[in-house]
Structures are given as C-alpha cells and as structure tokens.
View 1 (cartoon, rainbow over the protein chains, first blue to last red):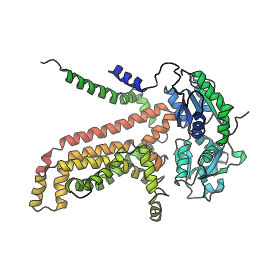
View 2: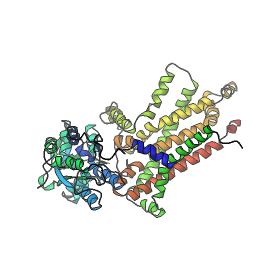
View 3: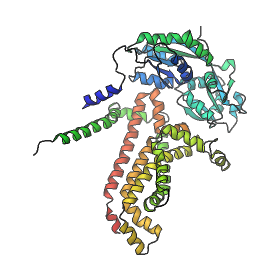
View 4: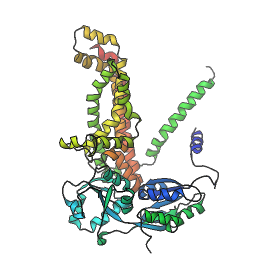
Length: 246
Length: 267
C-alpha cells in the first residue's frame, strides 16, 4: 500500500537519473531576492533554475525538515551559518548587502521616522523570525526603549516575509513599512524609500550556500560563485543591492 | 462465501489507498508530538491568543453565514426565477478561488483603496488589520460550503409537507421555520460543519486581507506558520490541537446530524 503511494510520489517527484543535464537546479531564496534572481536565472548557463522564494527562516526550516534544494540563499548570514554548523549546507558565501529603509506609498506625507509616532499611522513589519523583521527591531532598539515602544504600538501586521510588507503598502492597506532598498526599486515608482540615519542602519548581509546531498554540487557552486562577481553581481547592483562586505 | 471478485478487490484497494493517504499526515502530526510538548506549546507566546481568536472569529463568521445563508439557500431551493443557475454559480464561486486570490479580491473590494473602500471609510468601518476583517475573510471563503449544502438539503425536503403546511394556513415564515428548517437539519448541520472546518483552517485570505498580529488578526493557522520557522515542535503541537478541535467538531456534528431523524417533523 505505502509502497504504491511511494511509487506515485516518486513519479511526481524530482527523482531523475543522477546528474541528468536537463534537470534544472532548485534554489530556495529569500523573498527579497525574487526579482534579481529571476533575472540571473534566465541567462544562467546550465539551465534556468527553479526558484522557491519565501522568508529565509521558513526556507531554513524546510531544509531542516529534509527539503533538499541545490542552493539556499538567505537575507542574513546567521541562518546559512547555523545550517552549515548542522552539516546541512556547505560553507556559506556572503555575496551581497542590502539596506533597510522605511518605505511609504509614493504620495505619502510621511517624511521621517518620527512621523511613525503619530497616532493613526498603520505600520507593517516582518515577523521577528524573518531577517527583515529582525533588522527592523534592531533599528528600533537603537532609538531607545521609549521611541521604539511608541513606534511598535503602530504595528498592525507582522508579515511572514518582506514581500508581504511590500504588498500591504502597494495595496494602500498600510501607511509605512520597513523593507529593503531593493524592494522599493522593484516596486517601480509606487513606493518611496526613506533612508535611515547611518547610526541606526543594520548590516544586512546576504549569504548563500550549496545544500549538501544534491546531485550537481558543481553547478550549484557555479550559481553561488556567479552571485559574488560577474553577471549575478551586476544584476544585484542594478536591483538595488550593495557589494558584499570586505 | 463467494470468492472476492476482481472488481471488489480493486475498489477495496482504492478505499484502503485513500484512507492511508488521507490519514497518514494527520497521524504523523500526533506521532511527532509528545503529550507534554502539546501542553507546553500552549504556553508559547501568542498560542492561546491564536486559539481563542480562531474560535471567536469562526463562531462570529458562522452566525453570519447561517443567518444570511439559510434563507438565501431556501430561496434558491424553492423558487424558480430567471438567472437562478447563474446566481447559484456566482455564490459558489469562492469555492474554487485560491485563498490568495480571495484575499486580493477582498482587498480590491473592501480595502482602503478598494471599490467600496471610500464608502466604508465614511461609515467608519475598518476591516484591514482588524478582527472584523478576519471574520469577513472567513465568511467569504466558508459561506459557499454552507450555501450549497443547505440548498441541497432544502431541495430534498418532500414538497407535500410544504403544501400541507400552506394548506393548513401556516404563513411562509412559519413554514420555513417549523417545516423546512427541521426537515433539512441534517443537511444544514453538515454544511455548517464543512463551513466551520474551512473557516478554522483559513490562511491565505486572512493573511492577505487582514494581516497577522497576535491577538488581533493572527488566527491559529497563521500562528502555526510563524512557529514552523522557529520552533517545529511547538508548530506540530499547535497543529495537533487544531486537528483535535476540528476533528471533535466534525464528529459531534456528524453525531447530532445522525440523531436528528425526520421524526422531528412529526411535531
């Protein structure tokens, strides 16, 4: 019985002959990388990868539960580092950085962080476990407990990933949200980014790693290497990402 | 005893296959959870809030669904009018909408910049980021389950009873309440159970339309999704609690529905 089920599942699953050239890479990547990776994947030699975009924390949880994409790319260095220590991925490569910004609809009157303390402002943030949410709390904690408390009181939704925050802003449901600069670039004029003061800015570095147990580690390594330099790096810069830290 | 015929063997095999496939994931939830963890998970921040919000919001949604849905289904089942099939198709449409589409559609209709957004704002009604928005999302996705079951239940009521009631001089309203509703009760209850189950499990439309904030809009499925990333044990335990509640609901409604025999009509 179960054997029959397994057979059906295997038929639908990704069980091709080892190293078959036609099988595309599978890449689990942070939601904020969606646009840039989509472009990078289109011209990737070795075939367009299949992408799964979600919160970096959800993707890491899937890998811990036995999911085996070929590449994992996160919006921080912490999650790939933890998976590396657990023996699940190869050594992570820090390949880019991003800036956390306060995003508002293009026609918004909100002009500064202090405007968030006004009553009636609907603020949307990432949930604490997703990188964008943890960066957001880092920024707010640097404002001091009082101001942070006043701003956190405006939070109306904690989204599972950064694209959820973007969607609430673009739909006009929220007045402001903490997202990445690259998300505002991707929103193409519908959102405006308020740059945070330097002393508040968190270091948002992205790391990618080849997942152990895949059948084409060489191709996966080439995908990761191309993010740090060459075509992938150029696409990332154009999408609003910064160079990797020295 | 006759030998098992090949056809019997095949259909039995199909049933066994369906049973294994449909129960295995549920069994796995409980296999992965120790009773101690289950209790401990209830102490995780936000978990009790999520469970209580789920119960409150689904109950409120069910009240709306029954109060509006039962008479609406009655009309569809007992009157013939032009465009009836079109109306039935339209009210059942949310059944086939992906939850994410339902959420976006609700935003486009009732969000601050939606079709009725300005009108709602003038009326002082806020739905996005509010528990009321969760209830609206639940009604939208769950109501069609009740509507289609209730309509089938009303249609199945023997029309001679209806006519008898009218002949005896009962008003239309009285006939509806004392003849139609009792005789259709098993079907109405099973529709209610389906709608409740769908509402309890709602995820995508709630997240997109109402958001996710503990105690306000974060229902149990949203809390489970958040826990999955940080604490799989707690996510499994909360899933087990939700399965137990939904299972108990389904079972009790089935039992009640089984006991409510057409004998009730005799009154």
